[in-house]
Image 1 (cartoon, rainbow, N blue to C red):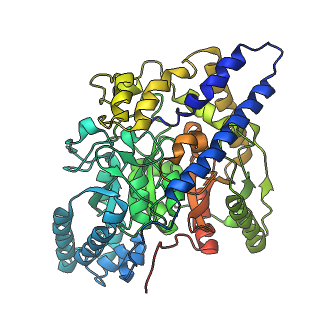
Image 2 (cartoon, rainbow, N blue to C red; image 1 turned 30 degrees about the vertical axis):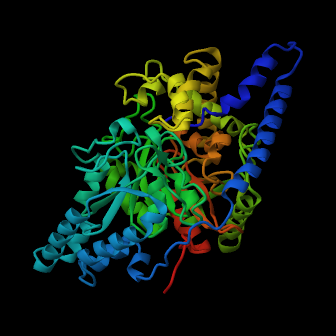
Image 3 (cartoon, helix red, strand yellow; image 1 turned 60 degrees about the vertical axis):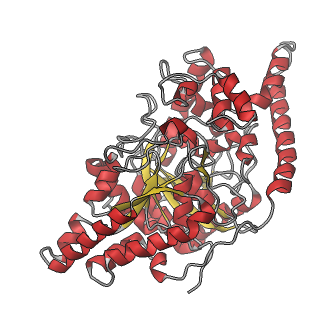
Length: 548
């Protein structure tokens, strides 16, 4: 829920010194100092993490069953037309999980036996012929298809820890809204995936289930907080997943793991059944959405989990790519505490722009939205709540408050039940701006102005192509020194705009890269159409290993 405050630790010293300087020192000088400090730390840490983690990682087992390479939509069609049984599908994906999970540690709980029984009932129902194929497709479009979700969305009887040690024995008493909707559509939940502690960080690691590893190189992160979900999908361990996103928790894992993911417009999908549940002020920033290997599965899944709100999105209205106005930004304009966009990511974005020109004669317009440079500061300001619980309280599931100094000492001697980033976040959360102060009000105003600027630019037919993240999947623990990199995704949460991550292949190191497509409020169908186009042009998901 709350991420990236760690940067304050190694920027506090110069803030204090600069505040004691003469008023003649300019704001620009402070920014230069901040940028230089960040770049120095980044360079030194890059060397350190390379020394510790460089190498190919553990090899992934090849994908040998072609069923694992099907879209969820295609699997549903094969089940209802009896080309394959739901039981066969379940057994295939369960076998894949058992094959990859010892390497990746992405699945933390399961209901394989119960899911197989559900699958048997589906097969018996289809074989009975009591319902036509057309009615089955209309009423239960994912009948018999297994799906997975993260360990903060309720699935009855399964782990619901949100990565918190104090919740290690908690099982969900009921399904979250989105999960219930998927069941109604015929889907079969079968696996729960790993998250970060309190779902507050962009590496999926906690003291309940440990750390997840990237299937393209196990020395690298999977992202967070839907990191285990992105990892499982990329490894072909599940045909479809449901994630949640308050600062990029769907899109960053999709970026790091080379799959598709969509954060819907604000208020479209209910957050009921999410833990921790957002405050009233934050609820519009949190989006529950689909994660999948194939773009074709995004729209039908969103239609299902949105329920009646799907009508607001006009998802059945056909999108003509020729009629979309495209804009693009190659970076955020140069934030002082965010990594520069990697050249290979910029090149991938330019290739997408070139494709639009060659295929459709569309001249995408390069823009520079200056307020994007303040994305991290705006996100933090919008996430501030007047009376919400402190992060030290969240670490105990709001049933007390940890003594952060004592907990930090315990961590150093290996006795804490919390992660280092969790403890540090609790320690530094009050170092930032205060709710309602002048600067807080200024940033809230900046957010409103940025929203209006993007709404005016995009209108009802515009798309902004923008990096999902400035660098490919970092090494394990590396986000500790690049915490504000999440701002490339987080800004669209607080703006409430729909955003879809589109994978654009692998970089020279074999790690996934891609971009996000952003539209104005409730124009989700445009970003989903762009995802389909990008997949057609660049191939979409690339299996970590494949034998056919």
